[in-house]
Amino acid sequence: MAVSRKNQTTKPQPQSIVSPKVIKRVLTCRPTHFTVDYVINPHMQPYAVDAARAKKEWDQLRKILESLKIKVDIIEQELDVPDMVFASDQGLVHDGAVLLANFRYSQRQKERIYYREWFREHGFRLRALSNIFPFEGADTLFFSTMLFVGIGFRASVSSCEELAAKLAVDVIPLRLVDPYFYHLDMAFLPIDDTTAFYYPPAFSLKSHNLLKRLVPNLYELSGQEARSYAANSFVSGRDIIIAAGTPISFHERLQQLGLTIHEVDISEFKKAGGGIHCLINVLE
Image (cartoon, rainbow, N blue to C red; front, side, top):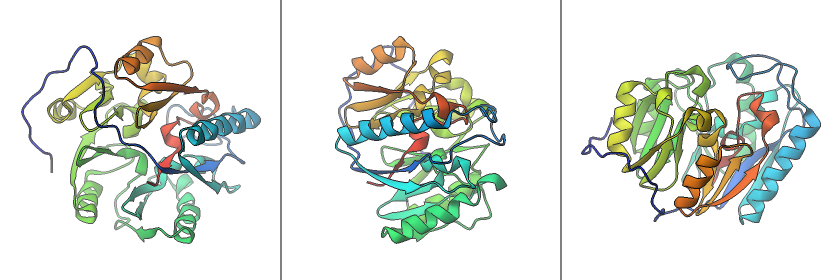
């Protein structure tokens, strides 16, 4: 499935982006019952969440999205699914249809019921994989005409074959090897059709080399940048929402790309291993 291109070297200095995609509509989940009461990734801190602060952080993120003229749809969180707030995980929306997630962990499988109902009620066509292989939306990121899929922790290579058949696009599996970067959107940040940031140690050597061939302008994140959830930022056009506390080195490179930076505190959601991109599912 991997597309072959001539090897291209990483440029030391980011160049201004030329083909930004503007996001029109997103889905996010109000964190009414957000907590951490089990552990399924190494970031999770049980019983450490300040619920009131988490609501304020989510509300600030919502306000920033709306200030960028993005329509924000909201799904209400149910009591028995603390990770339901991570809307990006729930599936992949493409051309008015949604491919729902098939969660690997039993603790998260009930979330699918609530999201399936929301998508149905809001006019989205429901599509599903075979449900034999695990698949989560946060492991899928479009880059140019390709769909990159992070495999190894939450999605399998077999799900990639199903995604390629369902969507009729070139699907590129990228093997993740560091459990702290268990979803692709924790380690890879597309900026436009030619530019992206990534954290090399999160990927197998083969996948690392594949990214260097496929992404013309590929810039490395430092360990400090990656651990601050830099890759889990959210891009719309020439605007980018990043986590408060991200190193100044990341700010400087974003500014070199001509991006306008918007910061938001997401410290409570980090206690569950989730960031800004994790909280948002792109609808249009």
